[in-house]
Image 1: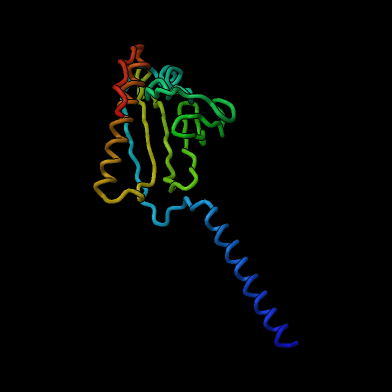
Image 2 (image 1 turned 180 degrees about the vertical axis):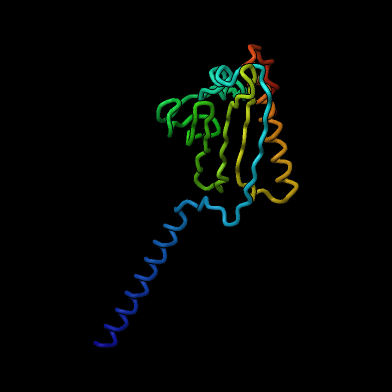
Length: 191
C-alpha cells in the first residue's frame, strides 16, 4: 500500500511539474519580448535655419502640433488620436504615435511611443522658434534617440545622416512656409 501510494504520489508530482512547466513555457511564449535596450548609445542631431520673420509669426505658421504633416510632407497627414491638440499628453498619428511631452510659448517636444516587441530607441524631437532680432528668428530642430540596435558604426552614421537630411529639408520647408512661400511637390515615395 505504501509502495502504491508512493508511486501514485511520485507520478502525480511529475504530472504537476509537467503541467507547471508547460504553463510557464506557454506564458513565456505569449509574453511580449522586452523593449528595453541593455546598452543604449544615445545620440542627438541639432539643426537650425534662419527665417526672415519674427519668431511669434513663424511659430503661428508652423508650430501647431499637426503642422508637421505639411512641412515634413507626410502623405497620410496628421491627426490627434488621443488627448487635446496642443496640450500635454496629446498623441498625434505621425511616427506611429508621438506624444506631446513638453512645450513653451515657441516650442514643443514630442516622444515616440514604444512598440511591442521592438527595441525602444527613446526617440524625442524638439521644434523651437528662437527670436534673433525683431524681424528675424531661427528655427531649431533637435532629435535625440538611441541607435545601439543598429548593426555597426557605419549603419549608425548612415542613419544619422538620413535623419539629418530629412529634417534639414523639413526646416527648409518651414522657412518657406513661414516666409509666405509655397512648398514644391514632395519627392516621389520610393517603393
